[in-house]
Every structure is written in C-alpha cells, then in structure tokens.
Length: 302
Image 1 (cartoon, helix red, strand yellow):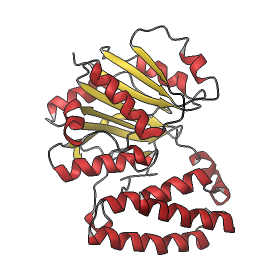
Image 2 (spheres, rainbow, N blue to C red; image 1 turned 90 degrees about the vertical axis):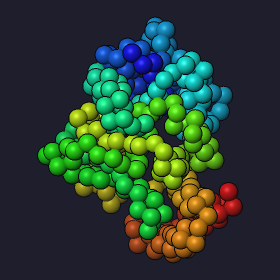
Image 3 (spheres, helix red, strand yellow; image 1 turned 120 degrees about the vertical axis):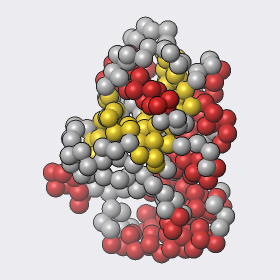
Image 4 (cartoon, helix red, strand yellow; image 1 turned 45 degrees about the horizontal axis):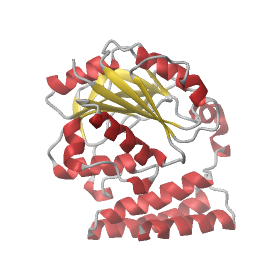
C-alpha cells in the first residue's frame, strides 16, 4: 500500500474542518499522513483539530499567513521527508467518499499516469458540476476554464480523459512530478499558483494528468447558493480578491515571455477597464479603480 501525504491548508476553517476530518479518517486507504498547515487561524480551527488523537495527523502552525502556494510547499516538503510516495493536495471545504484515496491511487497505476483528479461537484447542490476537466488553449496563453461548470450531471462527462489542468482543490500526484518541475511559485500567494504549476507540467510534456469521473468530490464553493436565489447582482469582488487575481493574472502571462503573452497582457488591461465599468462586480469608485491599476502594474514588475 503506497504511502500518501495529504496536504491541506487551514485559515479560519472551523466551519468546514470537522466534516473534512471525518472524510479523511474514514478512508479505506489507511497508509497516509495528513499535513495540516495552519495560516494563523483566528477562529477555533486549531482547538477543533487538537481533539483528534491520531498519529497520522501532523499540524504545522505558521506564525504568519504565508499563503496557499507556500503552505502547499511546506506540506510537500514534509511529505518528502517522511518518504511519501504520492501527494494529495486538497482543500478542506470539501467532502468525499471513503474510497477517494484508494481509487485515485489505483488509477495512477491503471492509467499509467502521474496525476489524477476526480469529478468535482458543488455542495450542497450535489448534482451540479463544478469541474469535469480543463484543456489549455495556446490562443489565450493557457488560462483555465472548467468544463461542465454549473451543468447538471447526467453522465455527459463520464469519460476518463487526459486533461491539462485540475484545481488543487483535489489532485493526487506522484512525487516525481515535483522532482521534475519543482515546487509551487510562492510569489502568487493565492490564485493562479495551481495554473502556473500545471502550465509547467504542460510545457514539459513528461507527466500526464487524467480526469477520473467515477470518484466525486463535493466543494463548498462560496456564493453559489446566494446567486441561485437571485442575489448575484448584489455580489461584489472584495479588495483582497481584486488585488491578487489582477496582479497574478499579469504575472502568470509575463512569466511566459512570448509575444503572444505580451499581447494578451494588453488585451487584459483594456478588458479590465471595461469590466470595471460594466460588469457590476466592482464597487465603482476611485479607490477600487486605483487598486486595479496598482495591481496590474505590480504584476508586471514581479
């Protein structure tokens, strides 16, 4: 039985951590170490976690919020030190069956691949698809799109298939992937760190990712229920999201160092102005506009 290092990052996760822990501890594949990297939670996340008395649980308490990319790297490095053969990088705002580890690990062998991801569904809308694959397109510099997003699952995406990207919401990979392409780029902090990771895999053309639809993961994506109830127009991007998603979008494109990526950056800049004016997702005031401009040029300089 392969030894799997499970890596998850907590940040004020008290409202979701107990169902997640139950899912992990109920796994039929029992040879694992769960690395919980806590980014200075201000709620009672750590208090809840300390109730679990299991030698397979390792809690790493950071003194500052190091972000998602650096947190995942901490988990990866600890898993390597403990001779884990495979890594499961996973959110903790998810629920899944007790066969997730067993089946995904088995598929790495059956499909002769390096990475595998399950079908990902919304929660509690458990028959609504969140992710059922992503294929990169060079024309948009390998930005990500979720195949099947917000579609009812009627089996239309039930084919095992090679893909180019999977969210690190849930991805099982062999140790050799990180050996070959390196750790996650910590400059991202959050957002686009997984896109960058899979882009490097895609460009190397050595490791294959498969989408495996016969395991499902249920993701507690914030805001969906409110949007379904007709409150989508009230939803606004917060400043933290605006800053990172704008900065990191530009940084991701700039790292590709091609004429086409440069043209995509120009396109993104003008699209950003139009979205600010017309999308309804931004607070249309000077401080938000200024934040967009600062974030764009910060990404350019990274």
